[in-house]
Image (cartoon, rainbow, N blue to C red; front, top):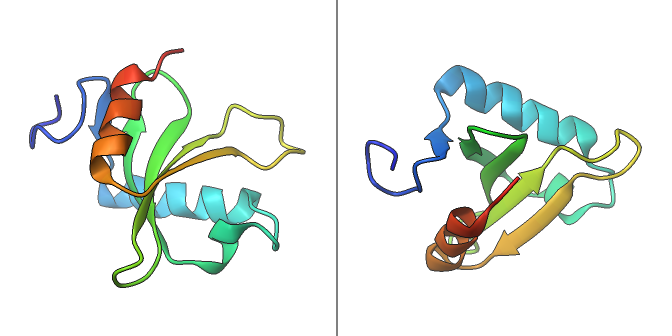
Length: 98
């Protein structure tokens, strides 16, 4: 698990430098009509074994968790899964496989 114990072992909290780069990566790959393109996003964690990143998305009380896979083709929006609760996200992170 991460030092804080929030995420499964294979998931790493992102540093401030990584956070900025991952947020820029997501913003650059989303189409203008994608729901995440018009909301505040923050990178939180990344899978140690692949290109999947966990972000928070939203503003104020409308916060959701997302897992975004960048393993897709550059011509396709990244694969995005949305979890309205941390418990749902944590289950998905635990079940995540390569």
